[in-house]
Length: 533
Image (cartoon, rainbow, N blue to C red; front, side, top):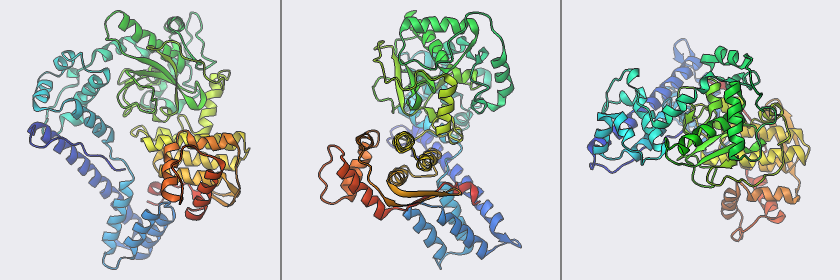
C-alpha cells in the first residue's frame, strides 16, 4: 500500500522540516523491513542446499502471476522473470518489493495521524509551545475543534512520536496528556458496563480482555430492562435518548444502539452545562441493515457521511467490548471496526433534531437477526474487516463496497442467484482487505451480473455470455454510489458517448459489451501475500 508523504514548505520552519524528515525516514525504514521480511520468506521457500533454486523461484513467479488481475501487474511480474539482465537473487528481491508494496507498514495509523498533526502544528513556535507543556497547550486552545485536540493528544502520547530523533523525549506513562473530552468520556466508565452482544460476537472483543468482557456480559443487573432486541430505531428525539440513557445506567448493560444513546446523552448534558463547547452530535447506523451497528459522530458538520476525516467517532459499545484505551473516542484512522463506517444513515442530528423517517426496511428485525444478517453479507465485522484494525477504507474502496453491496442485494432479492450473490460478496471482501483493486472489482461484478452462465469451481468463479438486465431498479444502481466512476468509464472507453446525464438500459448495455471484450471472465479470491509465501 502506498503511503502519502507529509509535505510542508521547506526552510521556513526547520524544526517542522526535521520532524517531517523523521516521519519519512520511519516510513522508509518500515518499508525496507517489510521488503526484507518477504525476501527472507522467498529465499526460505525457493532455496535448495542454501542456494536459490531456479525452478522453485519460477514456480513462485508463476503462482503470483496467475493470481493477479491487473494487466499492468502481470506484465511487471512477467518482465521481471523473463529479464536476462537480472540475477535470480535480484529477481527474488524485486518480487519481495512487489509483494511488500501491497501491504501497509506497521506504523500506518501513526503516519496518518502525523499528517493531521502537522496540519494543526505547522510552525516551529507552535511546536515549541506544545512540547514545552503539552497539557497546557491543549487546555489553552479551546478554539481548536474536538477532532484536532484529540489528534494532539494521540500524537503526544504515542511512544513512536517521542522516539523520533527530532523529538526524542522519553516520557513516563503517568505524564500522559488528555483533552477535556477524554476526561469527560472517562467519567462515563463504559468499561464497567456489560455488552448484550458480547457472546454473539466474540470476535469483536479486544482479545487481551476477552474473559473480562464476557464475564460482564453474563452478569445479572437489577432495574428496568433496557430495550435491546429491536435494534436501532429510524429516528430519535432528545427525550427518548435521555430515557434510554437512564435505563442503561441503571442496568449497566446495553446494546450498540443503546450505548450510542448513553454516549449522546452524556455529551449533550455536558454541552448544556457548559463543560464542553457546543458541537454537532449525530447518531448514525450502518446503512446496509439499519441497526446493524450504531454509534456517534462528534463534530461532523456536513451532510456527507462518507467523509469522516474531520470528526470523531464516539462508541461506548466498543469500550464495553474491551477497546477502552481511548475511552470510546476514535478517529477514522484508529477505529477498531472500520468496516462499519460505510453506508451510514443518520438517525439523530443535534442540530436538526427531527430526522425524517427512512424506509422501513429492517426496523422490525431483532438485533440478533440484523447483526447475523450483516455478518453473513460480510458487511459488518467480517474477518476481512477485523484484519483492517490498522486500515481505514479509502474513498475508492468505500465507493466500490457500496456499489457491490447494491449488486449483491439485487442478485439475492431480484435475480435469486446464489452464485452471483456469493461472487459479489467475495469481491466485497477482497476490496476491503486490499487484495482487489476497487475499479477492477466494480467491473468484474458488473460483467458477472450480466453473465448468461456462471459456475464456481473451488475458489474460482467462471462465467460466459451476456444477457441484458433491463430492470429499472437495476439500471438506477449505476447512478448511485459509483455514478462518477461509471461516467468516467463511459467517457474513456465508449466512443461517441455524450456527457452522461443519466444511465439507461442502452448505455448500460454498451458498458457491459465493452467489459465483455476487455476484462477477464473469471475471478479467484486468493491472498497472494499469504498463500504463495
